[in-house]
Amino acid sequence: MTSDRLLSSPSQTVGPFLSIGMTWSDGEQVVPEGSPDACWIHGRLLDGVGEPVPDGVVETWQADQNGEFAHAQSRLGSGSGSFGGFGRSLSGPDGQYGVRTVKPGSVSDGAGGLQAPHLDVSVFARGLLHRVVMRIYFGDEEQANATDPVLSALPDDAARSTLIAAVDGDGGYALDIRLQGAHETVFFTV
Amino acid sequence: MSKPGTALPQYRHDPDDTHPALLSPDYRSTRLRAPLRTPVDLPQRLTEVTGPVLGDGLVQPEDADLTRGYAGEPAGQRIIVSGRLLDGNGNSIPQSLVEIWQANAAGRYRHDRDNWPAPLDPNFDGMGRTLTDGDGRYSFTTVKPGAYPWKNHHNAWRPAHIHFSVFGRSFTQRLVTQMYFPDDPLFGQDPIFNAAPAAARERMISTFSLEGTRPDWALAFTFDIVLRGSDPTPFEEGDS
Ligand SMILES: [Fe+3]
Image 1 (cartoon, rainbow over the protein chains, first blue to last red):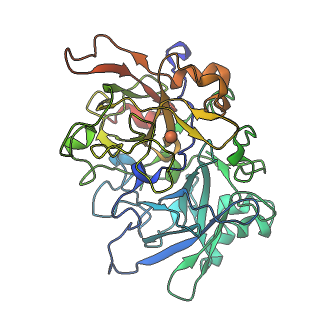
Image 2 (cartoon, rainbow over the protein chains, first blue to last red):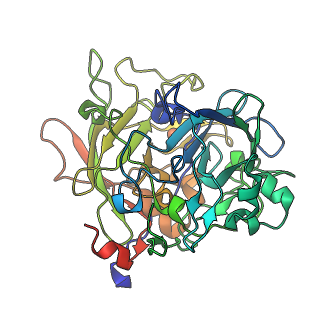
């Protein structure tokens, strides 16, 4: 029924004043303070010459610790519990972003195997006419990362390293997002 | 978690003439911010075809009326902006978060870094939120935003617009766009509007609606937003 199909609305930039519409009081808190196993995932959003991007948004979407999604269509996820799985962090003056969350469990790869723990990430900013999409993996999941189908499909370790957050020594994970340049983050089309 | 082997919905990719190119040099800020490497195709698995349930505690009914919440009425032309949130199959997307932000009637944003000499409006903050209803409909009451200058090129002006952020049902459908007004004389010189492929630009322009006006109160514009549709799966058939 191709003739019934509607054409998608085009994307536009969030512009420089996105904080007016996109600020949530607890946007960075995927889990509340004091939750068991809570950790911060953080880093900087950087442009093509390594300058911070202070007017961006990093949104994260992930499964819970059991690998289940709190999804609207319950048959695709657990649809229950207090874990929402969604985070939103507006970048600060030095490009800093961060969400407090828990490391997700492994998620089915749809072919009988598992994907390594990961977050799906959307990045918006002034100067980005469309969101860019990446994933965040975890540096202390070496075994799971080694067999992850998405990481395995990347050409080399340099590419993989742009998606793997390092243990930060403070119970959290750190990963800079580089929109452009020699160490440009691997971005995806979904 | 879905059962192993359960077919997941697969969202169709948009045709090439849908979205702006990330590197659109006439919009100067794209030059150092647009990724330059070819993006990698990410197959749609569970993470991509699921999405958050947003709204509880985030949206109050009064958030859809930007003319309320202060001591007085904001200056400017009062308007009602309404429409439907749809997917590419023509299905409405109910109970889904819609966020908007905009300049005031003079073209000034209530933001630290907007300091061009147009007046702030003490009765207007330019922020609105709502959830679509059971038929995917939304409605905001606001004032028509003014055009505003920016530094992109000599004598650059943004056409009047309202920023829209929508989620749909899945990570794949997430979209931020801008709604424009009919017949704006500033379209021709705006590199952000024109970054969208020519055939797609009109889909960002709202329609004046005489039926939607409220007599002795407000003009009205309609603006439907279409997110990517998914191909039917056996999975979806019994899921309603
Ligand atoms: Fe704007």
